[in-house]
Structure formats: structure tokens, C-alpha cells
Length: 232
Ligand SMILES: N[C@@H](CCC(=O)N[C@@H](CS)C(=O)NCC(=O)O)C(=O)O
Image 1 (cartoon, rainbow, N blue to C red):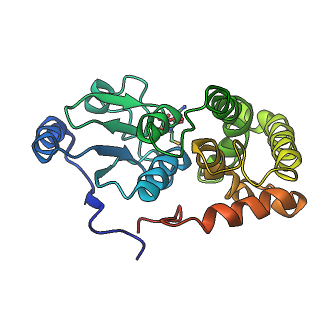
Image 2 (image 1 turned 60 degrees about the horizontal axis):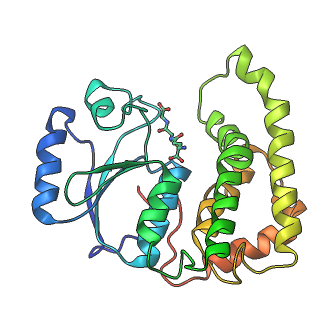
């Protein structure tokens, strides 16, 4: 079992009308809370960051496939209806995986202080959200759906081409660099690793990208690493 019991306090199947009460309890515990679904790569970015930092947190599951992020109660927390969401110790709500990574990594080696390196980290994270995740993560997610509608079917070739282009670009960079930025692991690597290492589940052939594969192995060798299929 991967779970660092000291670092994690799981609360599964929450009663939605108890969200406020749970948040108050968490506040008393002075512990951050991650609202997430174990199948989510965006949530996994945050879980992986917390594992690398060995930071304790409370974990609450909202099933995407059961639309549990679209209930009135959840929408009061994140009107965008999506996980991951980080609840800070004082109850402040922080959505968006890459923003959460920035918050958690501030002051650590995972977010370089150097101005240019910091901007380069952002470059990769914006690339992840615009050119990578909407193609690679979406094709993977669609394999979890019972069927695709006509619009989704029509989008498959474009997403396949977009995903291949993103992997090709990463492979070219990683053929010359061990890490995406600054010669060391940063939140740019964490953000892009999350959906890249499971791209095969969306039909991408990672053997076509050897530098990406070598980089995946480097990340998996970092101290504190936890896998995506972590919750069972
Ligand atoms: N840009 C957001 C995307 C979050 C997102 O798409 N979350 C998905 C799960 S990976 C979700 O909650 N989907 C549920 C829904 O849209 O109803 C991030 O990086 O956090």
C-alpha cells in the first residue's frame, strides 16, 4: 500500500450536506484538504506534489463519473464544478491543479526562485493546459465513458494529432535535457508527468518517444514518488 499513513487522512464517500461541517473539522485540525477523484490526473499532480513534500493532508473523494462535482453543494465550493480543489487550513478554496502546485511548491526547490526559470516553469505549465491535457487527458478520459457522442467522435482525430504533437515537442526537449527546466525536477515536470505517463491509456504509443520514457523513469525514481493508481 502506497499511502503514507502519517501524511494522509482519507475521508471517502462524503455526505455532501456535511461538507461545511467537515471543512470546519479540518480547520480545527489545521490541515489542508484535497477534494479529488483518484482517477484524475489533474488531482494526481497535487497528490504527487504532496507526497514529494511529505505534507500531511485530508483527502475527500468526489466521483467525476457520478457527477459528484456538479451537485449544488460542491458548486458552492467550486462554481467551476471540477476537482482538484485544495482547501487551505483557514477554509480558503484554491481550484486549478497548476495553481495548487504553485501554492504548494512556493519556497521549495520544486519552484525555482530565479525569475527566468520561474517563467520557464510557467511556459511548460501553460503548454500543459492548452496543448497537452485537452488532447491526451481527454482521450484517456473518454475511454472511461460507456459511449461517445457524435461531437466527441468527430474530435478524436484532432485530439490524437494534438497529443502526438505535444509528445513530440516534449521528446525533442527531453532528448537534450534531463528535466524540463533548470536541470532539476520542478512542478513543470510534475504537471506534465501526470497525463504523459498514462498517455498509452488514451491510445498513444510512448515507445515512439524514448526521451519522454527516460524522463518518466527519472521522475518515478525520485524520493517520495507515489503512483497514480493509488487509491483502491
Ligand atoms: N484546468 C483544471 C481542469 C480540472 C478538470 O478538468 N477536472 C476534471 C477531472 S480531471 C473534473 O473535475 N471533471 C468533472 C466535470 O467536469 O464535471 C485543472 O487543471 O485543475
